Length: 225
Image 1 (cartoon, helix red, strand yellow):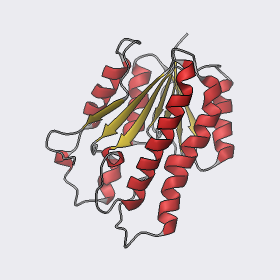
Image 2: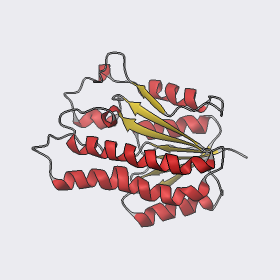
Image 3: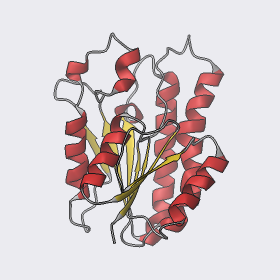
Image 4: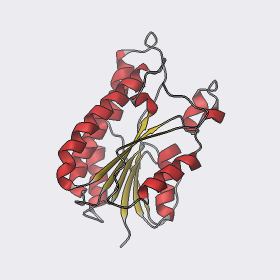
């Protein structure tokens, strides 16, 4: 049987690229996103998923359980990122980021737990390096990234009982369609999608007894402070 993966955020960008890479490696992939994914593959199951809607989370998990009882790999590349200063942000902006990036993933993992394979399942969480530092004009996004990191740190400790791996990627900017709305950003100083996939596959291919808890990577001309 093919190994099974769930990838969140498959409508574009990193999630789409990760799903395509896993499909090329022979995985059966369930993709979840608010918009339809452009991926066309016999082993790809595209399921509508808005992490702010509990009903859609339940429907997604049920769709997976219709075919399998367990999942080998979970990759969370979903979320929203809007860049505004503190002055220009509202409590609604902050609430939207927390609802999607933190509370929505919290509710998803509640349902996902039943699909874990002890000593096997590998969970990849994609963070921005904003989860490790502070950048101006990212107030809502940075707050949600720090909150997500705290939440997942606790869950990882509690899920030690399953003997599974968490790999947390703290990633510099990646050249994806996200930046089309921010023309002032220099994409030459960003990672390419191919470079991200190289790192992902390197960790995925590592022996099962090696743990990579926190990995930070970015373009050599990028910055972190």
